[in-house]
Amino acid sequence: MKDNLLMKLKEDVSIVLCGEAGQGIQTVEHILMQTLKLSGYHVFSSEEYMSRIRGGSNSTLVRVSSKRVSAPVDRIDLLIPFSPGAIRHVRKRISPETVLLGEKKIYENEYRGERAIDIPLSQIASEVGGSIYSNTVGVGLLAGLLGVDRDVLDQYLSHHFAGKDETIIQKNLEAARRGYEVSEELLKNGKVQIDLKRQDGIKNEILIDGAEALAMGAIAGGCNFLSFYPMSPSTAVAVLLTEHSKEFGTIVEQAEDEISAMNMVIGAWYAGARGLASTSGGGFALMVEGLSLAGMIESPLVVHIGQRPGPATGLPTRTEQGDLLFALCSGHGEFPRIIFAPGTIEDCFYLAQKAFNLADQYQVPVFILTDQSILESHYNLPSLDPARIPFEKHFVETKQGYKRYQLTNAGISPRGIPGFGKGLVVLDSDEHDEEGHITEDLDLRTAMVHKRLKKLDLLMKDAIVPELIGPEEYEILIIGWGSTYHIIKEALKRLGRQDTAFLHFKQVYPLHPDTVNYLQKPKRRVIIENNGTGQLGRLIRMQTGFGMDRKILKYNGLSFSVEELEAQLKSVLD
Image (cartoon, rainbow, N blue to C red; front, side, top):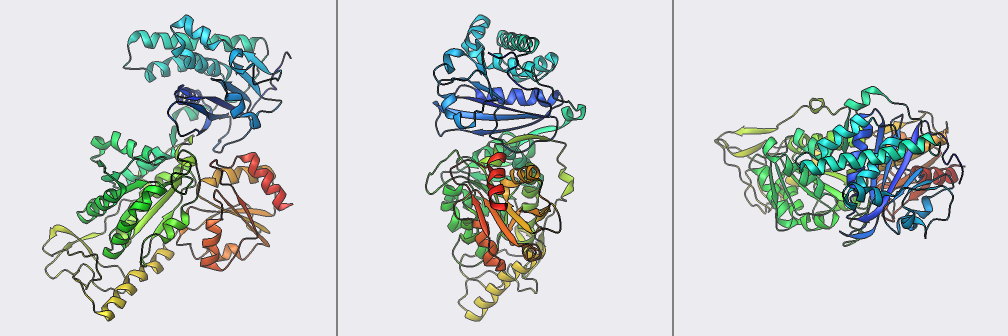
């Protein structure tokens, strides 16, 4: 075995934890991420896991860096296998530079390299009090290697296990101490060398994932009603809103199915609340009839779709960008809508907040398209400011003779709330007159359709301009949307090309009018999407007439990695 198993790493360390479902890998991730952040390091984590409660092989990536990191990489610097099969699961990502830290009995039949260090995690845990403490020994080991202060680790462990029996707390502290001592011995012997720079301000930043940010953004946007039926990966949003329901006065209802959930949310908006329907593609399929109802009665509506691979159940715990055209074309009849696709955790917060204002203002459905990749990725960021987007209400106090569907030049009728004013608020799912009563007057039908569709002109003017990253004078334009943002950005930075720019869409419908100006400049347009058909590319061509010269698509249930995308871009651009 070589004396120095790992070159000195100064800026960025990639750690992969791999084991079976039920082994507590997420606990290791959580404690490690928090203690690293509190020690002054930038952190990022992402997960991939099977759709099972026990067994299988799952892995978690933790990036620790001296600079901000927000994207997954294939590279593994340190690999911690917690169960047999872990090595096979991530074999394609193991390089000659990967250092394996774990129990020999777990990896000896799967790993033939020289860069493995036998760490008796189970034995140490048993000496402390039982195998259940193996994960905490692993936390102490990694914390020590990465330079986490012992006091920071002990304080956070005491906080994490607060409420448990004092004996359990002390055993976890002892397990972490024993793991930490092993790391000190490895560092002393020069077998592992890591030299990351700290930044004191990071310890005061927040560490958050996309689901938490979206739930907080909904609350900041005035959301006070949520109806849902559990479906991964969107369930996390409902769980978070439930946990804080008393604190913020939010009613959360787990409906018997998605049909009921959608109709409850429409009813909540009718009564003056701000409702959210949160689901995934298969659940939204059941909500579509209700969506058309919202279109006809011009009800505000916010719908969150946590995308995952389909059709049908597909890969329920994996990621994909496969529901864009579904959200765009869902519902019978024609009515306007807005579709957001957050590219960052910050976007999850601010776009959720904005969605409620716009739904209220224009009386249209607003979609927030996320996916497992962004909902379950964590990284640290300075802050989120609820005051950045002012809270807006757009309903009116009704008067005698109030007309819910009054024909107006802008296409927006004053929206009343039952009981708020003297007017009668009438809704009907049939075509209706200005007061809301059923009509078969065909001229009035034409006028009502025209009124509803006129909103689209307003929505286009209020659309978010796509973000251009890179040189303003570009010959090649890379186009992406949603959760691919950080991955594309880092891959292009590595390539360092001066002729290539990146255009990212966080609003994918309606497209901002400036989109045409960006698309007509380059010699080549390349679309990058996590789906099999290039759905945004198809939408762009339909809306602007500009097609894509090349497509880089991935649809195996995993997000792109930075290295993978860098290689594909290089082959396309050269």
